[in-house]
Length: 212
Image (cartoon, rainbow, N blue to C red; front, side):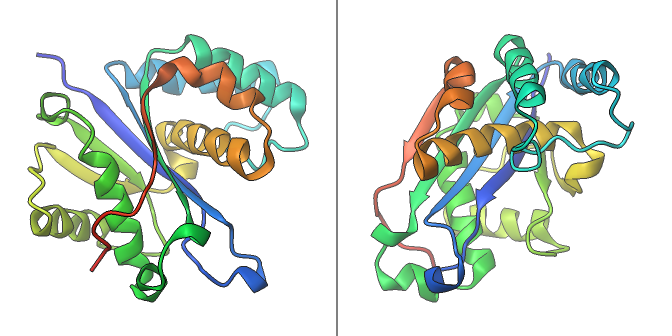
């Protein structure tokens, strides 16, 4: 039985201090693939083609001034073997209670909102790799606790965090999240449209039960 490898990253921030530059939107994206090594090698090939350093990190924002590179990356992503899920939150539309919860709880709430829409059979025995969030060293443990609190079956065989610089799958999740964020925050949908067919589910969050 071939199990999936999931990777997740976010775009935007969890702050509500809009007067000091907090983003209006917050996005979490997850990708899943049966062939993680092929995706890693794909980014290696693009690095070679563009004569980039071996440790070059692909990030949506960091490629903002390199239109040709970003176009190439998203052309490759459009043909790559992965599926995607994402949730986008307009923080200006949330009631005050959301702004009052701790940053980690805010993140975990929306991460688990997203995890719930992924079929259990896809999560069964899978590996979940998350980007480090806000320096939280025990993110896998906290995620498991939050899933238990929300009665979400874990299913994943492993949950771990890595630095995005060291894990290309997280970089791809960043690109996916960034494409959704840029579509709504700036009305620029070129990148999103290239990978639109990869999305199994894109949740435009509407308030339900607030985080605790």
